[in-house]
Image (spheres, rainbow, N blue to C red):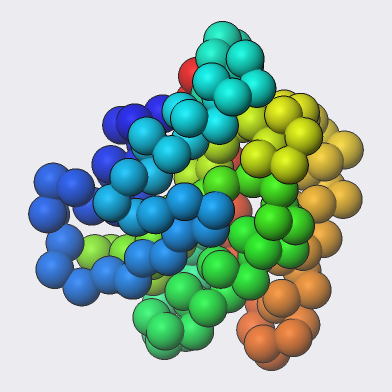
Length: 147
């Protein structure tokens, strides 16, 4: 999970322009903060976290709006229960967000369940609603599970 956070937050400094936000943790210590939650709840085994990439069509969106949408998406999907980092990358034709989140809830220690039902009723539903809210529809979401 540390590698996914580092990639999302551009720790190798491969990009000069990007936006970063953290939910329930800090940018500078996101991995350590997430590990602490796992320790508190005795959930240090199994899937450690998730990585989702949210891409937008070329020229469709400003970096600021893309980042805002990424943060709104994470807020709605996790409801303040899971720590996450949201990083908006500008290094390709398609502006895209990396969203990496802890598999363990801060609130109750339960693990995030990644399955087809949650993907359709959570990830896609929220993305569709944000698409309508912000009046665009060309986006792609890919989710990667990292343990």
